[in-house]
Length: 431
Ligand SMILES: *Cc1c(COP(=O)(O)O)cnc(C)c1O
View 1 (spheres, helix red, strand yellow):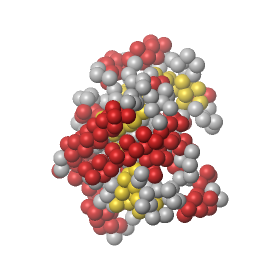
View 2 (cartoon, protein in one colour; view 1 turned 120 degrees about the vertical axis):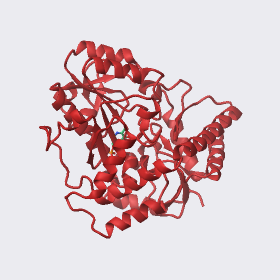
View 3 (cartoon, helix red, strand yellow; view 1 turned 90 degrees about the vertical axis):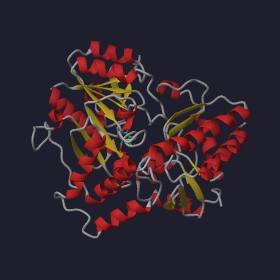
View 4 (cartoon, protein in one colour; view 1 turned 120 degrees about the horizontal axis):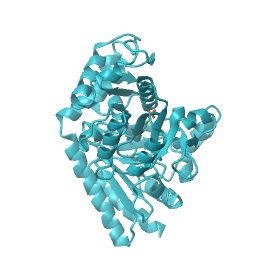
């Protein structure tokens, strides 16, 4: 059965709104940008999601990236329950924290020491505090359309005339906070140079998603990351790669392995939690030992290094290392991309597809998508229709044009074939 009947989901959403703001615990789940009410999930298995109305979908959200082996992978579940038998949280040290930290440092040569937190938001906030504490400088540079969680310093819009100071992107973020966040344009090294020239010796860090994944997928141009590395190094600015999505996703060692760049600090999350709540940040010893209890920069967490999350993460990262997961993902994602391109040829459409490994986006625009502005040229109304058509055809995509589709190892060739057919049907019905 496919997703046209959704009466239980509708009922739950009505009830949820009585107790939870907007009925949801994270805004995108409200499905506002696809003009429909959200579906409620009963369970997931492999590549499939099952909703409370008994509809089945092939899932390309994969919990927004963490589920690289798909839903309810037996190996991860087994590890979690093994650990749960011995208690769920101690607020004290456990061996599994060391094992995961050691594994991360082995896979990420730029990371000597790593600190666990509970979310990607926390990782990015903490990496910024550490950068400011270490350098004694206040300003940071972020890129338009890059998402680093909901910390105040990141909820900043570009001011008028793009390369000005930031302005608050949400009520509740103060202007003084916004002033310390400078906004650059992805894939434009000139935009970064201008900000650096205009703010000499005031910039603590440049933070970015090395492959943008929160405006849809936007890969870095050849040389962009290398040049960024060179400038930040020569200006004594800390370069932070937010690899919360790309870490373990585009390669075991993330985008820094794929593009061969060594950032100073790295933020991780999503996949390293194996589906449980985790974030982490790490880097060279000289920076990381500036953190309490060794150094003066404070950061802490009651549930940080939670044993269940560490166990799920350790198992996930171990399997990724042992199996040729990324080759298989690349092959399947390639098949999907080829299928979608074929469909567009047949239908005489020229929408843009961006893909890096198992991250992919179909943008409803005919412009090349190289930065946030070009992503914004997409026809979001059309995406909304496309989303609903795909859902009817049993395919669950992210409920927004500006998100990434993720493949997991659980996606079969048959799933991909079905998706290509659904894409053909959905695209034809839009015209
Ligand atoms: C998801 C995400 C975050 C935030 O992580 P949460 O766990 O949702 O707080 C930060 N950075 C990037 C690149 C992300 O994709």
